[in-house]
Length: 237
Image (tube, rainbow, N blue to C red; front, side, top):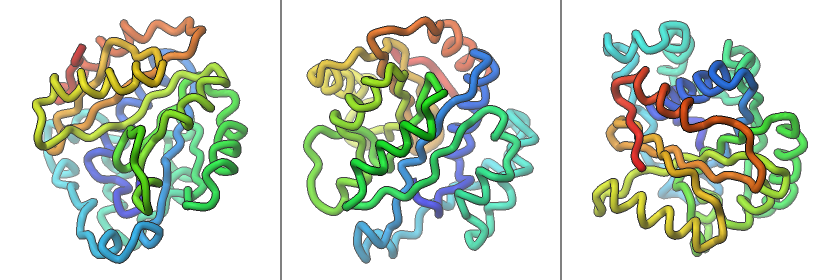
């Protein structure tokens, strides 16, 4: 996650999902933004002109999903106002989400992850939003844009449920892509929840869930209800 993306369509669907989870399960959700600065990746990353997928703010069907949230996110059409800390202090989502806002860098990964688990110690579910999703072999400066097996293992040791964002591949059909991703996760000895949320947001995103050894929450019912409530979401098994 980068601050320039705050309030784009992917953020909107993320917040819809986390708010729904919180209401359905009657618990707060932990959100680790996986916040990074483009300067830490390189000049090409800085020069990217993305994060402006915001037409949803004026789309009648999408506005009706959550008018309160739409009203808040319209403020971030101005890129100078995109400040994650300020957002987390002022949003009504504070009732539903515990935000971890620290920036991840190349040098602070272990400390950053430890601090996140302290901050989110009371939340059973932790949502992770890395720019590029899961990887088990990414190296170099772009590595901070990925979630790694060792990150997941550390969180699972705290008996947390992990949900993370994965963008759809442009080269593989989505069902096949999910099969490949699930296999990677299972090869890393993780228990992958059967239901994957697909958000049809161009590009599409998926919410992938990894379960700890002990879990008493009924996610099956919650995910099914969520996919029925919002017309641009669906379950992929």
